[in-house]
Structures are given as C-alpha cells and as structure tokens.
Amino acid sequence: MLALESVTYRYAGATRPSLRDVSVAFGDGEVVGVTGRSEAGKTTLCLVACGIAPRTVGGTLTGRVLLDGEDTAPLPMHALVGRVGMGFSRPATQLSGVAGTVYEEVAFGPMNLGLPRAEVIERTESAIAALRIEPLAARDPRRLSGGQQQLVSMAGLLALRPAHLVLDEPTAQLDPAGTRLVGAALGRLAERGASIAVTEQKTDLLAAIATRIVVVDEARVVLEGPAADVLADPALEGFGVAAPAPIRLERAAAAADLPAGAIARLREAAAK
Image (tube, rainbow, N blue to C red):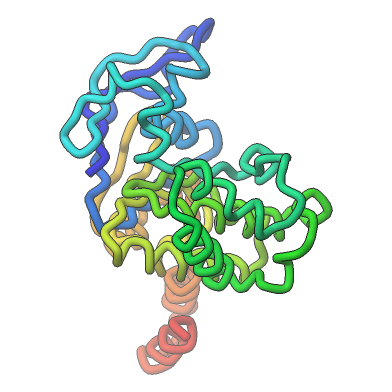
C-alpha cells in the first residue's frame, strides 16, 4: 500500500502550500482516480507520492508518506524508483532519449534492473503487446507522434511491473482508442496486485477503471469514496469536474422530462 498521512507540501519560494493536510491511501490491487480542476494540487500529490517532491524539486513537506508501511522520509530517490513507478502527462519527460528503437526503449527499464535476458525480453514483448504497439517496435521513439510516444512511455512503465504506480494524466495525448488500451492495461496490472493512482480529467475513463475516486480542490481532498458514488455526486461539477457522459446524458433526459423507459434505453446505450 502507498499512503499519504496528514501531508502538507509547499514548493520552495511559494507563499502557500500546494497540498494541505492530505491523507489518502492507494491499496494493493486498487485503481484510485484523482481528479479536480487545474491547479488543484493533483500533480503535486503525484510528485509527493512517488518521492520526487521534495527530494528532486525541493520544498517543504510535513506529514508522512508510507510505502508498504515504511516511512519513505529516510529513503534516497534511487531506493524508491524500483518500487514506485511515475508516469507523466508529457511523454518527452519519460523517454530515455538514448534508445534507437521502441523495443529498446521499452526494454531500457528492465535492463537497468539487472534482470536476466529472458525476463527482459518477456517483459518487453508483453508490455508492447498489451498496448498493441508492435508496428512501432523498430521505429525511433523520437520520430513518433505525441500519442504514440505516450503509449511507448506507458509500455516502458508496464515493463518495470512496479508494485505501486502513480500516473499524472497518462492519456492526455491519446485518442479514445489509445485511452481504452491504457485503461485495460492498468486493469490487468491492478489484478496482479499493484496499487495505482491515476490523475485524470477524463471521468469516463475513471468510471471504467477506478474502484475509488479522490477529488482535490484548493490543495485539499474534498470528496472521496466509491467511484460510482463520487462520479454521480452533483457536487462534482462545483469542483470543476464534469460527470461521465452516461450520467450527464441521463440528467439531460430527466430535465427534458422524457419517459422513464426512454431514459432507461439511453442509459443502456451509453453503457455500451
């Protein structure tokens, strides 16, 4: 389990904290969606959870970050990297920049873990297949589109098979098909026991993959609970987050005073 306990964090030079007294846990085998308006504190939560803040970016942190019950405060960054994977919304920050092909890029992480050659190959090919990027395997990662690079960077993370995964808007540059591929891959990773935190504005994706939703606003957690309950909460839009399409469609139909049967058919169609 990855957990934040009463965490307050302020960037160096900032006049106020970007996180205030945040307590949230990401359980093993669980996908937790983190959402909220821009500048609410979602990315900061990710940086703190994976240890980049304050180790790399500086700033001041109070409270505790626990990794499988262990306080991470005394751990150096290199000790966290093998246990917590971090995915960013901009793939250029994720790619190694030294691999000549997509295959080598995906294999880069497992190779640096010193794994046996057969396991590196198995992990690499499994991750590539999971995101259906086999046609890209021989191409130069630097010559791909932003969406293709995003899938490659996600494959690299999947190949590491981290026990804990923190993703900051991992589908930001992906079309609906790519978004579904990532969602399915994350579901499989959770089934293996990984704890996964995903910040997203795409609530349709969160409705499909998340078991629990955390809503952040003005540096604090303002809503938390089962995904179905939070995503249907009328208060959600007040925090700058649109409800999933089926819920918005159902509300529009009810406001138009459509018959109950018509609303039920709309609900079934939206679910498909």
